[in-house]
Figure 1 (spheres, rainbow, N blue to C red):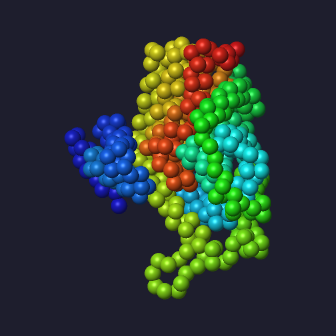
Figure 2 (figure 1 turned 180 degrees about the horizontal axis):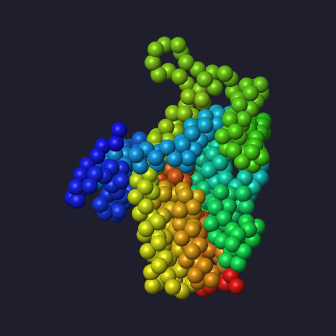
Figure 3 (figure 1 turned 90 degrees about the vertical axis):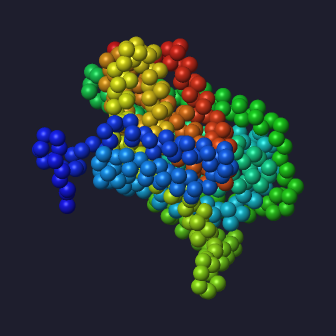
Length: 471
């Protein structure tokens, strides 16, 4: 039942018609409190426990809720953010892929890949470069950065860790490859969103995806080549130790690459990561049991006594992801407030109409700033950023006669740069940290490709490289 109140003019108004905050910028307070909490937890208490981080985010929401003008609408916005498609998708995927990842770990696939790496005499340099390039190819083929992360970490990370490759660097190489594919793949949701939001003035139609991809290839490939070079330099002095790992290495365990292949193929054919993960997990269980790679007790086991005694990769996989899953829920609750208060659209529109944005170079510099800030506010969810600010960038870019391909590239490109690297508030950082057990700060510091891509795009903006008018 809607409660009623009297305003100063004695008119009856509904509470739900009141804005959430008197000052729109207060919507950013839970984010600021979360950032501050993370800094204290990381630097003073030296912890990055996902449950604790989630608690800090919820505490920020509760404190800000006390300052809301319309408290009912405030908590409705929180619930809307938590129940958003992006939030529920990532939450469910974490649980499904937790089981799949644990299955691959138990199966000893890493032992098979160690045999492969030793056979080809991979060094640390070679293994990291090979991982980055391989993940680039897979991510570009599937068009899914998150889906590729879930498939790549069980394969490459556990293998590299077993032979002494630096964990943070390896995790960074995997995520960098995933972001490369997300930025360039024609079937990527970010590619499609960036093209569809940028409209041709003469025809009134959205930009064609093929033309957008062709025009952005030069930026992506330059950044990828530089990234490989940086990984080669960083890893040059890291030696690998096969002596202990090779004792358990066996080509037979490479059989468990088949479930990974099923995951990737079904994901591409159906464009549905849930179907792909479910079929890959079921196929992997059957294959593992029939081949003898693992037994039924490694799938699920309980000693039958009352209490928390369940073991096996199905139970362990769920448990390993719960902290990150709860953190995702808290982050999307914060995003719900920011979205409902319309603070992003308001700030973006003001910047795009500012005097600094009246030249093509100025417009593109503002694009870089706005897109990165919004990506941070949206927790590294690049598709949400593109769909939110894309129409505003389209309108401002048309006034300056900037080609829609160029606008789409600035939009998608900058969304996949610094905004996904922030360790406190990026789903890419939190998911990769959960899959690798490496601290968020260390993982984020090894995201080389997004940082290099930012530099490449910024130089393009400053020099005018690749910029052309629409007509």
